[in-house]
Image 1 (cartoon, rainbow, N blue to C red):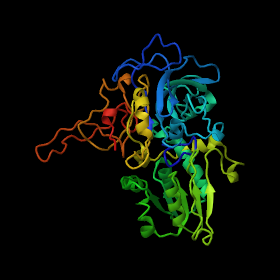
Image 2: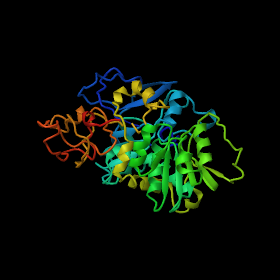
Image 3: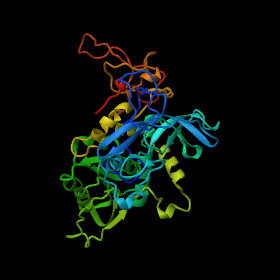
Image 4: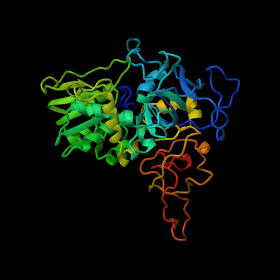
Length: 451
């Protein structure tokens, strides 16, 4: 999850990384820190590497045991992963409450809280060995950040063919957003406010905006997130401007900023008898809840939402697998690419993690990605988007060992270039060509458009 939804493995949403450089070290036979080779190395890692948090604000890559898949298991080569600024931020800073150690334990986690711990919950990969029906399929697995892994076959969820791998890392965030929407009871025609425009908050706004007749407002302290809101079909305002622009009579308000100030804003926007859904996860922090003034007179209802459980009214028909499968299908929406952000090389993750997890003004609203150097190139795609002096998959670029970062963009990923300025005004004289050999959204960091 991101800062607006630290509610557990869903999916949020939200930042993406990818393992890219080689880590050659014959003597590193212990699960000690891996020693990646220099940036740009073409040598794929000979042993799996994983990211471990080893102390407050400290992480490192460690070699993992290498083994083949047994019957009933699959060997998965990672294509992309995602970092959650909310949940993983708590783990990174050592802020997981002792009372929540067992409940916060993630799927396939190694180590124990607080440190050292291998924690993370989402990666997208390709099955390179295992049962024939899954072989060569793209799958989503709930697993810490690792470039190659063996996992039970039933834990690998196949991706819909029309959902690109890099967008699929939003699957857990979308699962959380779907759960929040169910808990909120949003119906056709409702006025909906979402406070907190991080990955999960933005996904909730997108789902609500697609319900007929709804009016959706996305509220955030960072004006730069207006573009995200408008791309996803919502109106935007800062907390100060929201009451003036939208009034205080929303039918449903979702709070997803994980701040006391955001919760105060959410309660202030709710109309009489309205529902306020608390979708944030605060860890060990206590927050002040303003229950004075008109809270009781307006008979407001506060509902907590947590992705760990399907809402009671759906339990007879829904389980976690069906919910996650549905969430992946909901990612067949190109507008969601606006939530994919800045590429980070997997070998650089220990140094980059503090910046990725930084909150407050100026922190990226979007989800960050990961791709191992030995990963296969995903299916071809078409696409259009920002043009510039960038190159896309040439024969040399298509060598999977040279893919150093995950593409992320604030819109459709790049059209092929480079372009040649014309004599008049420097505009391109070359028409964009469709991708050849890449999936929707260029997977080359040199072609990524970051915000």
